[in-house]
Length: 251
Length: 194
Image 1 (tube, rainbow over the protein chains, first blue to last red):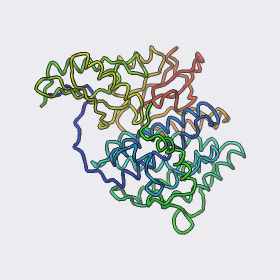
Image 2 (image 1 turned 180 degrees about the vertical axis):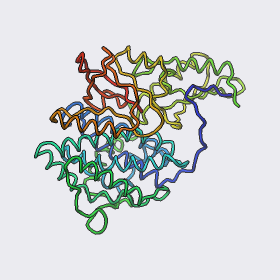
Image 3 (image 1 turned 90 degrees about the vertical axis):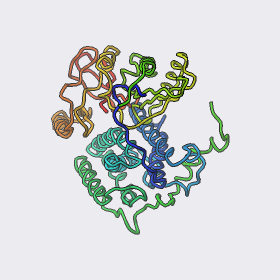
Image 4 (image 1 turned 60 degrees about the vertical axis):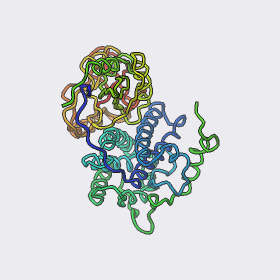
């Protein structure tokens, strides 16, 4: 008893949802979306403001789907304490200058594209979202790559700022490849592909690959365990205060 | 094998005729976002509609759902539920041929038909600050990189010229890029291939 539109293809049955993984991926998307949204009204040019807001919107859409798999999206976004968030420390880092935002985008979107491409091939709970989102993320990564090339291979000032940004965020990138409970992925291979891709972009942008540690004592990263960096608390306060002050408010 | 009843066919047609809230020249059928209509219940007045978003975060999906509900209720349906389905993921290939033509007439360069899955094809122009010879090398290298590039060139919806440049990868909505025609100098939106 079904009338189908022309695009209908057979649907797959639902797979059980690993909640820890849904929170990890959902919080990455939510937190980065909020950070990018902070550029509204501040971006260097109008086109860039629109671009960053559109990327933020894609991420917010992904976050809504992922958090809804784990529970009530609003409760999870607005009523959890800092230690309950499972996002990478990379995505909560402040926007900094435009170069920092682009370096963060390059590192994260390259990771997200590789991870989602892998999740999309399986029949796990995240496959439908991953298959859809990976196409959006390809545009995010391209955007970050083009800006990395333009800033790195640009003026002395833009080169220096981009180099500093890539260096500063490098220590947050090891965390991306720590296995997440409930996600089946070849983490070592993901990391290898990530390094290869980022090295390629930096090379074309005439930027050095940062030399600092990505793992171990001098690196960062326990966001997946709920340990966050100092700026995250303030970001959450801003993100949550309206909902907490006026529970259930709507317009 | 499931067969649609005449009522379901009729409801699919009605829901499909609802205009897209952001691009009102297109109907939901032409956009390819309407997946299925199912009538439940002995009274035949409870209906479930499957709708898929263009982009995961597309805010238009809520307006589409409300419009579908309104139209189907007006047709005597007591209970209308619109479900959002993600799989299989919507692609710009789901836009019908007439939908593409309407986009062009509206001043938006339609998405080119993609061939299979793979890297998203992008027409990458030189950055405007770059010296011409370097710029050419860069864009050539990236054309080679975009292995899935559609065969047909992207054309200005106003004058038809294939000589266009990218101004911004993201335009008024996530699904569009902003370009400029180098022949007639008009800026235009391009519905990006997804």
